[in-house]
Image (cartoon, rainbow, N blue to C red; front, top):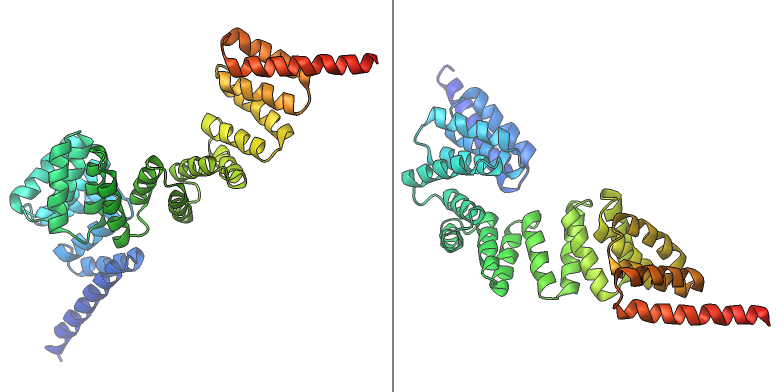
Length: 341
């Protein structure tokens, strides 16, 4: 019996380890954490369990906890390349770039084939503006960790910096094949699609982004750009309103909300939206043009003339406002003449 008891414990620990890695592979972070913490209760210096917890903290963005876990790994083994690489990862995310670079260089000295260290190096080099080095490091990271979405994402960023947008788009798509929920890669893919004018595809990316985080400002801005370009005013109105709720003083959001109302023919509402917009930015001549034009469309010609005259004082040679002024003035006098008759 005494000989069987330790074996039973060992079997139980092996099962915990197996389940932990199974949950880790399936991105079930809570369940994986439960397994690895139970292993650490039994053996506080279990390197595999410590590294499993580091992966979890990294994946869920708990970088203070990741730093502490990396320190535990290094206390157990000062020459742990994973410990140093995870320490570097945490320091990078905590914006302690110099310390992160030192820790990551130490990791690579210990193990030049450790994929995470090359991912870290490419990310750090991107932050430091070392673009040729970042591109080389990202390629090396892909060679060593082809199934890590961060390696492909860094490669995509490096290529984007060289304006190699087709290749960058492929890199971000590969990253998303490995992790469809990766917000950064989705955002970067969206930015490239916006730059090359593929707005319908951009809207599909925005839909995925907003499913992950309905309040993501970058996704809302990307969606607004696409809907504005495509002149899809109902959608533009909805996303602009959502962005206004998050950022009430955002000029971009309020401008596109106003544009959506005008596109839908809702000129009374657009006029109110313009008042709010001009309260935020009264120096924008185009906003005053929209104000004069909206009043003109509402047949409030006297007010349209007044706004146009005010705008002319700001920009005397701005032809669109001169035209609005002329049209509104003409109709204002025609109305007066009809009243006399």
